[in-house]
Image (tube, rainbow, N blue to C red; front, side, top):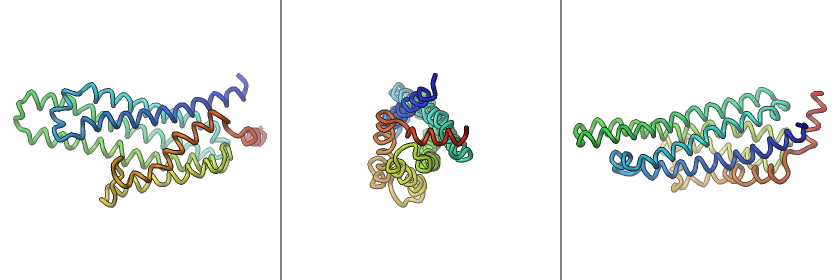
Length: 239
């Protein structure tokens, strides 16, 4: 396979993975929230376990995808700054670890719900405490921790894209701004300052990164690809 063909394959795969991971996280969150965030979740989780499992599988699709984005981008990014490129891959892997922990917590609600129902609600306080702990762990892993590592990793990615000119600078600028705005989204809700849930006012902070990951980056990579002159210039420097 020629170098040009390899680059084109990377462009298509990365663009596709941006779209796939966006779908997996949004659809997975929607399914899990519809079951886990109900007042009677200790009852409904058991009866709607298929929705919980489906939501978990969609999240895992996202988790696998974000790691592969990092691995696919690493050979290109390392030519411009290997330390930052490694940092980006590391952030994606840490993000994946916390996401997996979060979905495991959601899965553990299924046997807890089944035990709660079979016990006839005896010792309800015990089950409610365990359920709240699992729900809180799920929230912390799938929201603040995910946003924190996504924000840090994304700033690294977008900064390297800006530096290398692999994509037009207006595209990478949206990425830098969008990913940077995820960092306060990860911290401020924990302080009770603002609600960044999809229905909260703080959700507006996620608009720039959504534009970057769902529209600008995939469309540019599919339509134009990485800047050939940037690739060739760096190739000549390292040859």
